[in-house]
Image: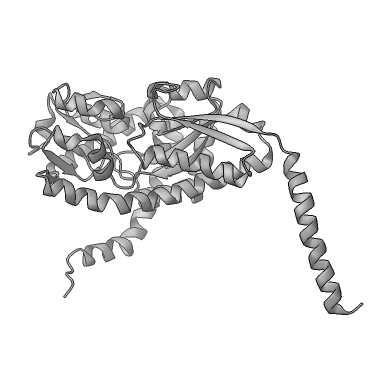
Length: 362
């Protein structure tokens, strides 16, 4: 047989094998239907949309055999109930931020963000190359949960205030919506801290139930209408410099999935994480410009506030570490990685950013 004829027939055979055995192979995998509840309203298109993207990609990667339906906060489970719902198997997945449950285990904060911690790139490096992901999965396994990083809010704004902040003393008696350990830090500065679901923040701020509220950044905050309830918008978001979002998954149900479906979830969440990085950077720029045109007063926090908050953060972390062995075991290596990361970024990325910040096109 001539070589050309052989290759032609071999090629036809390969295509035929793919056409026959591919579908037959796919049909050996079961049809699976899961539900994912989110911490977000549908109006939050980047956050809730991130969950929808994960579900869409899993469906595409499994040729529709693994279906995940996505439900906004309150449709299946109230936002505060997501952890218990996933842990107990009432739903298979929850798209959220693990730090909402630091009352269950303070170490959960590391999975999301810690005040004066790492930015999104640094947090990502810690999770995937600093042992962070393995560490957090060991902690969450005790609660029958495995988590998959599926996004990051990037550097946040500090929040919306009904009155100006001139120094640390202005937090005494101030009522603020702020979750995570950032709330513990503000409480140490004298604030009264509340944790309010996203869909309720606007009314609380408008009606004066709280004097200030943080959420994420210009795009999300504008969609929630927070600029209509408060005038002053402060930065930087020292409390959440790079908050990781996660798909919490029931560990027993996860282990029962075919390997191919597990790989689809891993791939889809990685894609969603990278996509959210770009999505926020793309949407926050025009949103901030609109807010400023509309009269929002965008202000930097006084240095005295940052110094006081940083000092209080150290005190809070040390106190938690003294009481909790798991937290203490994570805090030391986490701090080492953070300091090494800061040195590298100061050597290159921060220096570049400092320079270009003052440039103007000519």
